[in-house]
Amino acid sequence: MAVVQRRMGALLVMSCLVSVAAGGEIKLYSWPETYAAQEFCDIGVFMDIEIVPSCTITPTPVKLQPVGVATFEGCSSLLVQCNFNLTLSSSIVPTGVVQGRYSASLSERDIDAPGGTTQLCVRLEDALPGGQAGTKGVQVAVVKITVAPRP
Image 1 (tube, rainbow, N blue to C red):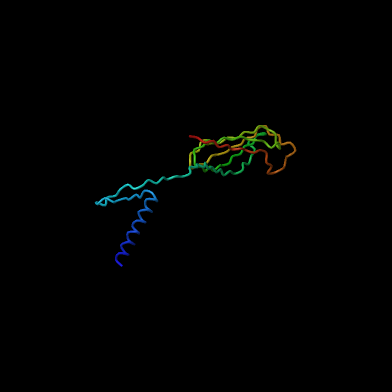
Image 2: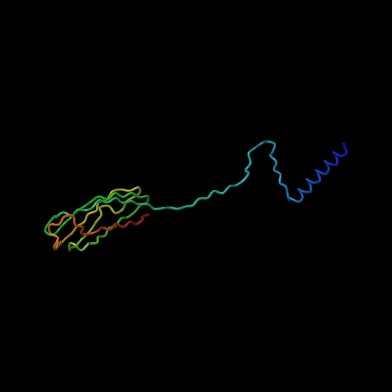
């Protein structure tokens, strides 16, 4: 009986050696006797870098009031919220309902993050209302605000 157990044990050891040889190299890591911390591996850290500029302008309509003969003016505040420094500019496009010379200006053009307030003023000179006399709430122009990033 003891002889059979020895032969079985020998066969088991032989089969393990054969499978180890066929499987490739076995790497063993041994810890030093002092149990000191060792650098074991490096792990890469990755991310997608996406910077999304964001800007919100909250306008209020401009109402033109007479300030002289055929001259009208009006102002409104613009609340600007942004995550970058910017420069504002304005342009005005008449609708054609009232003829004249239109201009638009901003009190503050350079706004730093996180934002601020600027005043938009519109002026109409040499106004020719045509057949619109007595009409209220007529849209006579559109102001376009342009935002440009600033370093």
